[in-house]
Length: 265
Image (cartoon, one colour):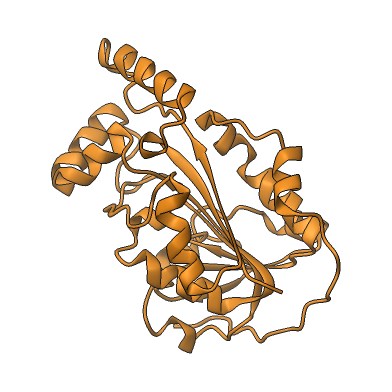
């Protein structure tokens, strides 16, 4: 069921500050808390600087990044996407909504090419079996000069590597034991995770995105998480391991990443 079908609009060809300068100005830190605290600010900053006004918030039914009044104040046209009608029903009624599997091969039958300037997701990409198809779909739906951003947990951070390796029934039970609020009916339930293309190492991700057609690819790495904080002993060991990984910038052991793809103008 498609609740909104957007049509392409030609973007203005305006000079804009390089992405690297914008990232440098944000004072990016490799600490995982920075990634969570500044995700929305980064989306807002890049939207304003590059005039990216037509947004698609993937998986945003339950928890959209912007509330309607914020979007209006910033001059943004936000559309929400989710595979679940129930999730979209929880979203503000005033938003346009598209219910579809954003990673399906036929996604572009229901979303017009070049419909959006900015496509982004938080903690969604790890639940997709075929991330390459999702990135290809994002590329197709972006207007020239548009940006796709995925905020993801990454392999091979120990907690996520464990989640990836053991059966879903076991990992779900462990998570609910440590975090009782992560039950099925909560605001933050657990979904099966596959971690396809979820890496903090640009060398693993960039070749795939460039093959799809993205002109510029950036991967911002972040280290640390709170999953072991309730387990004495393991908490201290994991914290020491995180400090070492961060100090030596071991990209194979990041915990989270911003993966950014920019479509050529």
